[in-house]
Image (tube, rainbow, N blue to C red; front, top):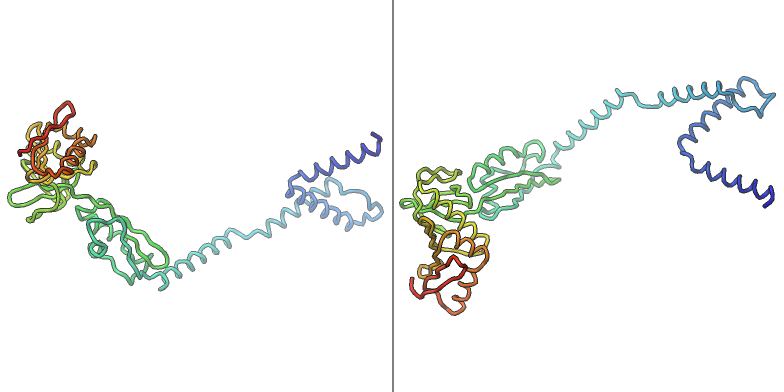
Length: 308
């Protein structure tokens, strides 16, 4: 390889290295050199045009550029004023009729209808979506109902108020004098009814204290806890008893008035969770049998007698 080839290779390598430098630093250095060169020209150094600017000239040029950039930046006062003006403009715009509530949307409800939720919440259209939506009051109104476990309010631009609720599910009713105390899976009292509700009726529970939105207080707490466990297993296992009675460690669940399932509490819960009882009942119904007694044994088997 001759000297000319080596020089070309070195030249190409240098150019490649220059392209790898940070563009911003290159630009600043170039500005400093150009400004320093202008200063040299002004000083009348025309006799040596090829002489590069001295280090002192470059420092003076760098200081001048720094002052120029500082002057070109907006002052903190101007920035603050701009933010304030923009904020005021946004607030004014949000208060216009563009964001008037023209629709109310309800989500998550099952027990109550949309209209019932809206009425319970005292929510109305015609108000400003941001300033007068009454979100806090809506939540307070709704969560005041034992059936509403949680309520949230959100806004959808330009004019929709969204109410989302999480309802408690009524799972059973306890017989109390001539009333039915409707409860959820935790035994919380949702309502009192004089008409028989379409849920599992639990008998044999002795009420000590009751208050809407609070858990029932009973004297036979062992039986009540067992009943709740069976009810929750039924709910998860897609099984329905019209009536449930727990006495000591024994449970009796009525699929029909003439079809009863009985066994120890733990055995019944296990049988429901493993879907053994569901399979037995399904086989009986397939044969058209809707009368008799299914007895659950501790060994996991079930026996059937055509008598109640």
